[in-house]
Structures are given as C-alpha cells and as structure tokens.
Image 1 (cartoon, rainbow, N blue to C red):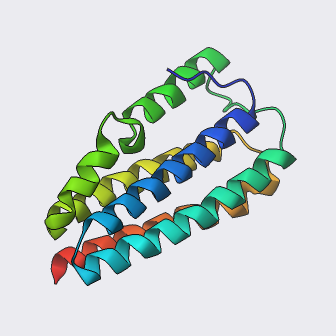
Image 2: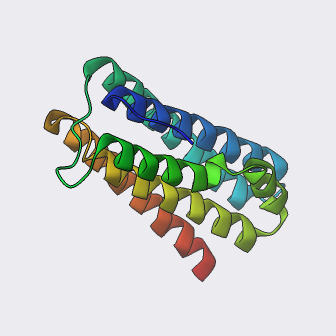
Length: 158
C-alpha cells in the first residue's frame, strides 16, 4: 500500500495512473482489428498522455499536502493507498485483460469504463490534498474523465 507524505506524492500517483492508462489504451488499440475500437482507444491514449503532462507540471509546483480536516495523515494515507490498490490500472493483469477484450467491444468498453471511474474517484480525492490553486486543473481532468465515461457508455448504446 502506498503512503503519502506530501501532495507531490499524490500527484506522482496520478502521473503513474495516466502513464498506465495510456499504455493500456495503446495496447488495446494495437490488439484490435476493429477500426472503431482502434480509434476510440487511440484517442483515449492521447488524452491520458495530455493528463500525464498536466500532472507532471503540477508536481513541480506543489509541496505539502493539505489534509482534510476530518482525517489524520495515517488514516488518509491508508484510504488513498486503498484507492490506488483497488484501481483497475494497479490490479495485476488489468492491461493484458483489457487488450485481450479488444476483440469484444462491449467487454473492452466496460473495462475502460472501470478505469475511467477509478481515475475520477482518485482525482476527486486529490482536491482535498493539493493547494486550491491546482483545483481548476484537477477539475478539468475530472470533467474529461466524465466525458470519456460518456463516450464509452455511448459505444455500448450503439
């Protein structure tokens, strides 16, 4: 389980999350022969790469964590660690399972939806820890993850 001592540790986890998301989406795009699935996952990979760069820049700007008033460092660190440990991208074999599902559009999309939801939840928790000046950037990423979720859900509707 991860332990967090400053906001840059949390942002570092977000960078790694975006890096893994890109890799998973690229691997899925590469594994499919369906042009629609390939385009969808290639586009998601590009957006995850952009998020990675945003979080890298944020990591250089911030310092200590601003713990929520209702939590101790130990308690909140355990909570964030559990969020990461249960995140799709940190689950053993997730990337391979996503790529393997690329032959079945519904399965691949549902796996990607899990990834997006897990990321949104982590980013929402980041708002408690980073300086207020960084909140607009995190909110932007949350909104983009919501958009990804809507895009993925729309694929299931067709």
